[in-house]
Image (cartoon, rainbow, N blue to C red; front, side, top):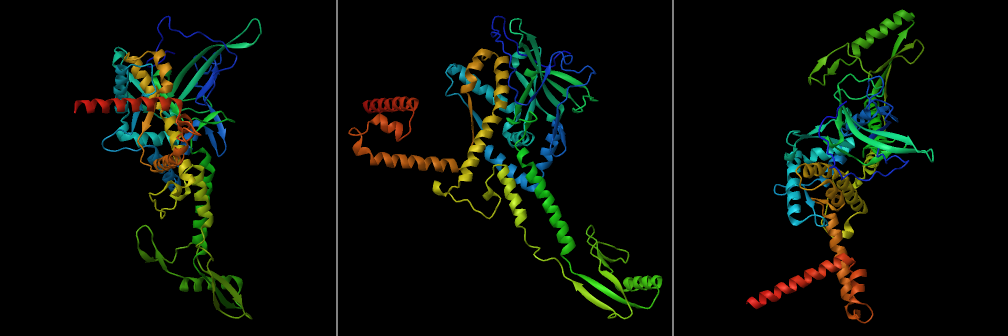
Length: 507
């Protein structure tokens, strides 16, 4: 089959040297590895698509089932609240600035003019994504599903215009395939990786583990799809899992416990009566008939309809909370009515609170955020809990992994518009970073207090500098400045001093 979509090809003479290895490239779980002779271009001999069988705990059989399970989990109120905390902390925006900006300060391979073009193209990428308006939705989909796909639409007749549109792809309908062609080495008789080919398969009906798919399957070029995963891998099944995966058990336990609690409340909360009816020496059949007559005459007749809010008389209404009617033969204590007390300690929900806290811990969200009555006070950094600091670092890791979506789209845009070459991009991409807007004050407070303590220590050592300690030692060990920071700060101080002298001369 022909590949659909664009394919960025190297110029002749720019091909990288082919390095041979007997070890296949590291698989992050996002690709299904097959041998080139296993099927024809990624298709099995039967014509079906190569599927991925997960068979994980909890009835999850395929990767599509795994994504569906994550989406169901996200609808649980406690889980949804935790996800909102994570998304709101990761993505912050206002009316003036974009939620994220590109940082090229560490890039030395680009000139100032190229950097300006890169910044402009990055703004175009944000517009194509609609990131200013849809940033929360995009980040939430990536976090919940554990994977994110976009189709990069390019005019094949005019590729110099770059990407014209981005369309999201349902993760349940697309698979990444990696074909590996091996060849035995004649000297060592070891199978050497000769060729690696990556592409995507899209099926509008989704994939199953049997390979028999009813929808139309399209083979798509790897350069035409932006693919970003959570980076988490189940090493037993070698499949990508989402951040909600480790909370799956906690969510199920919490739901089962709440359902059991509701059933217990309904069945045990009300008081029920026991009627002992004296039937004398009546035969069994006649005694049962007499008991039913008494029951019909004295049972509760008022019924509340929860749907309409009406209270009506319905003698035929039966439920699990009916009173007990028992016959009593002659010689007993006659007709008697007693009360069966309701359940005790119905207000205890410590077990529910335990599993709620366990759910928040499994999602790396501070438990204090579960308790809404806890107020947040802006004070010294010592008042900040360790959980909040850990949560802030967790959010930073999420931002770094999510930023790969910008890397791939920006790479395609710059290469198509011939702003940079493929080789220049490879040299510089490790130095490109993305600055997300932050509205959390925890890190700022911590950094401010650390700086305050360093300056205080510096003042205490001022009398000993030049006698027992050198300035270089103080800057490295007290102020914790690196060699690069020392050089940059010295240049800035020199420049500021020069500008001040120039200003004085003018006056």
